[in-house]
Image 1 (cartoon, one colour):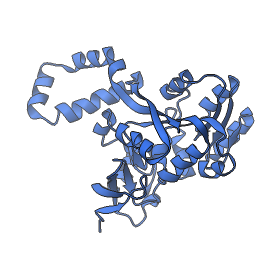
Image 2 (cartoon, helix red, strand yellow):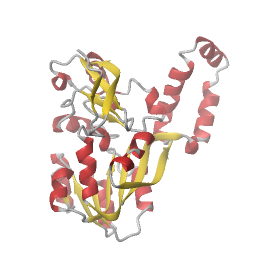
Image 3 (spheres, helix red, strand yellow):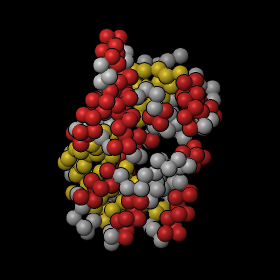
Length: 305
């Protein structure tokens, strides 16, 4: 039986309203077909997954809780070369914002590329990671990466860092309030918090068949509005917002999603589009103006007040 309202996981005093219901069978079949992963164990006794929207912040999250992937799930995904890309847009954008003398904490160091690059460049940087394979690799590389949560790290590292950053991590977290608060606790007053997540106002919202935006991979759906709301909930000021330009490796995803959702679902548009063979022309213009098209991710920079 579905409940229309539950408490928000972000704004603790706010309600969240039921906005969408997803059959678990769809997720199980999707992950099996695309990644050869059996996720049925994460949904034992569950037939439906709900999406709730926080009425105060507009943050959307999946329910019930406790359906997020474990280490075994992520070890399977790591087998795909594209899962941990070595140096991404958000890494480069963050480096461009640095003065050169910051003490840095990266929450969720993943493939270790960011913490390794900055460590080699002379920064005092600490990484946090719960993936055991990454911890072993970090130790072999001589990197300061700790196997602990940011909530635990904050207890003994209060107001220690000039910059705390997380890249493609927050969308995996269920208990987002304590996760964000712990990052802020680690910051010095005037320090910077950088969060980069998939932008669910971009073309990815057209891709209902992209399984990795569902549990057990993602537990929350962020956009500019919900990220901006953090300034009202915590002692933060929004400094800058950056939208990732459409990347070349996402071109086919972008083009196919738009054709499927904006053209093929309309009979007249589909007939005209196919008859006039417009796809080549459409593809040409998408490539030409890709730097002006909002791509996969959004990066928000905050200052701790």
